[in-house]
Length: 610
Image (cartoon, rainbow, N blue to C red; front, side, top):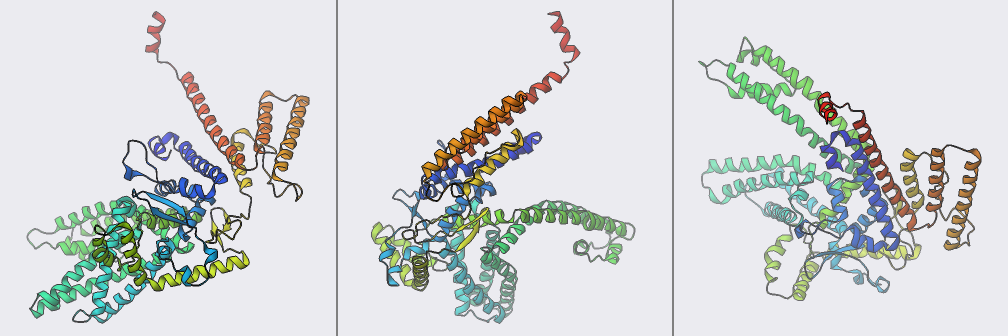
């Protein structure tokens, strides 16, 4: 719908509205699946990748991945989708790879009731969980940042152990970036601003390492050695800008900082148009100032370039402009300042303000979209044995070479031994945290509340055995679903009386069963519909009003036939009927326009002769 709206400008508003309806309908269909099997929906409907017949297998995408790609924030912010994302984040649902190298998602279930001691919770497989991978990544980056700060501030004349460890970290990060590109694809990799920052910073690190290695081990001239060392350390000093900006990625789990990151990304995308216009204006004036200089004298290209850059940065030098050309220099430079400082700069401010407003108006949805992208960035690079950088170098050079020799069972055992040796401290920390949380849930049956979607819901717990209901809502989702359907119908058919489902828990005595509640609601709505029909017959209202009242009564009866999956089904049917009515009205408008369009006189004469 969005793509078609970009092609057909005249129907863009209608198609954008239909795109929103598609997201609401997708959320309703998801709810219908969840009513039958919640965990099956998370593992086989929302996260399982599919591809169309005739397409390549590597084009397979899951529903959530498609929502990330098309930026369907309404669907991503839905309560069930966010529950699924939280289950993936905390490790309640694990990503596995079958014998045919196909990605599958399974529920994390094991006999946790029998676990008593801390070592019973020692599970190397928990390192596959995105939450723990993210924590390991943060810890390793902090260590790397400490080493970088020491090397840059002290500038040792010869490489020491700390500097060599810093370069080892960089190599590990570079291997990790290549793995992300290979596993997740280039489009998914370049979708994050942090990956662009990584490309720039790691490239500068490698250039700095080349100068540093040449000065330390290849050159013998003292002057060149000093020069190469200065260049290497200068490049490393410039990297501080990118590395400390990258620390924001450590905080994007927080909603405030995550929203600011989204604003920054949107501003940079919108600023591309401004810098594109500025580049052409800058080139034009640069050529003018260079050409205005006297041919007999030596032309100063650098002076013209510096003049324009300082002018854009609000530090104009009128003397240099007049010196470059005494006749036209002043006026050409004044025109340049008018175009850049007044017109283009105000355009840039307007673009940035629009980006900030659009993001902050839907900050919660945008943050959830960013968080979902972060979770799937770990899942898009599936690795049964995730080695955090720089330990991935051990995997590449010392573990993977044994994969053609060993059987799958022996290769798995080798990885578990290596990972258990390298990461025994993080695994013990994870085991301690999960043990304490399990004991708390077992004793108090209490969960941590987290925000997501439009309502508050309980955190997905790891104790899927002792907690009776992992997904107890604090508000009635059925009410919200029916209200959405009513709001759509109200815009076309008028107010639908008595169509809102008030919810089972708010009606009837406490000992009333669900089946009794269903039957009672059906009888009540049938009686209400008969009373409404009798009132209409006595009032002798117009036929249009009768049709609307009949439709309202039918909607009231249909909305309460079932208090479970029927709610989602009614919502989907309402949305589909709304789309059908819009299409019928569009056809009526097109036929009316054809009737009102006058036929040219030249076309009428042959018809009359025939």
